Amino acid sequence: MKDIYILGIESSCDETSCAIVKNGQEEIATVISSQIDIHKQYGGVVPEIASRHHIRNISIVIEECLEQAHMTMNDIDAIAITYGPGLIGSLLVGVEAAKTLSFLYQKPLIPVHHIVGHIYANELKEPMHFPLMALIVSGGHTELVYMKDHYQFQILGKTLDDAVGECYDKVARVIGIPYPGGPQIDRMAKVGKPTYHLPIPLNDDSYHFSFSGLKSAVINLVHKETQRGNPIQKEDLARSFQDVVTSVIVKKCKQALTDYPVNTLIVAGGVAANSGIRNGLKELCQDKQIHLSCPEIRLCTDNAAMIASAGYYAWKLGKRGDLTLNAKSNVDLQ
Ligand code: KG4
Ligand code: ZN
Image 1: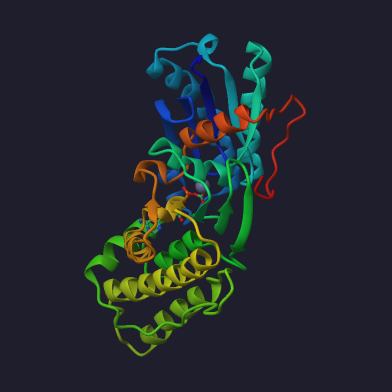
Image 2: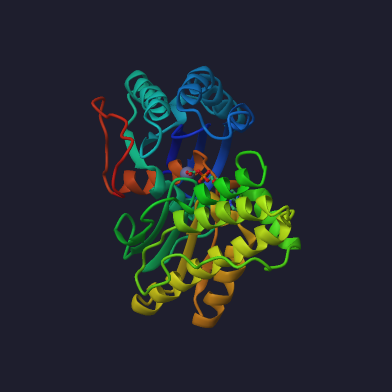
């Protein structure tokens, strides 16, 4: 069988990325241009600034990726593009670039949902075995998805308010850690003790999540302690917070794995890099005797390799876009 090379493009938030993946599983080249240092000074991603930087970077990133792969557009079989969800101005830059390449080189265009990309990041590590459960935890999403086969998504639960990564970043901000504070909170939690009492949010039998109450509880605690003149033990607060987040995530996954028997739990998205959550889910999967699969940490956060991998399976299923494809800031998993 002929090898299929998919060129993926991702620009939904603050990373401009292009990658080439062979047969959905073999990463040939990945280039990521991150804007974190630019947005850091504002405490979060500024959409207008993000789209302007995507415009500046997109051609460079695509050219560099082809160069690293020692390939030209003639070697590419199809172009996979993140069309949503995400920041509309950012998405548009990638979508227009992909449509232009598709038109110019007469290559099929494959629209990819950003969260589907996060799930398929696992495919770059090991083949997925169905049925499986996927937990997506990122800066913009928290979802539990049951998959019977490729591209069959049943959303069991999602966050009712903030995403888990968003909650991490806001908690970090209140204790003076620059954006994105998730990784730093994780590092601090490793050396802290769980001495602060925080409520477990949406501690019920549903598969849904809620993180805004927990975020408010941390903000209130920091304000109260500061007013009383008690210095915050940042490492201990990070540990207390991380333990609560981990316990609720493990609880919801446990419920879902009990109700929907599977062989594998996939964890995807930026927060899948979190050591507390990884360890909690590792224990859960050992208890349930199922396989836990996490992408390489480098491919947990936004990148185009995951889009190219997801694009390959969409390509195999005959999913195609055309030049009327538009970016969508909000779109259901499909
Ligand atoms: O998937 P991603 O790159 O962007 C979205 O699609 O949202 O995820 C970025 C998020 C940020 O909120 C960041 O703080 C969080 O992932 N993150 C972490 C860790 N590494 C990244 N949160 C907690 N612990 C980590 N180790
Ligand atoms: Zn993402």
